[in-house]
Image (cartoon, rainbow, N blue to C red):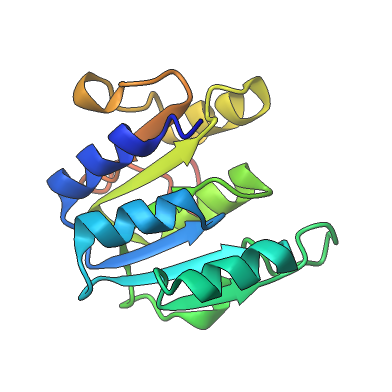
Length: 166
């Protein structure tokens, strides 16, 4: 049911994130809180009011932001670009919500070097083609525990920065 769990746990143990952003809270938020502890800051973004309410009630996320993802003018994916300055980078981004490619590319721009992007269902062709074009092949090894979840590690200036080609 939640094929990403072991992969996400593995990334948390390696990256040891303190600042986390996720699109699509739920099981992932509980795993992040369990693996990273109470001192980690977890920001969750949700498009569905019902799930946003559940996310707030579980208290696993420090903040739950709710945006309508259906409208093309929605701030759902891009709000971090206008809400945080360039010094406020994240250690880990988990994408399992709507508009995944858009969210993942925004996440990549706000990740610190050494940070990780984890995308659930990344194997779907409409995600896979774009992600591989901009970020290259995902990590293998210990992170390739299921076919549904992919991990990209942000390395020393060899990445798409939102300002041009990779």
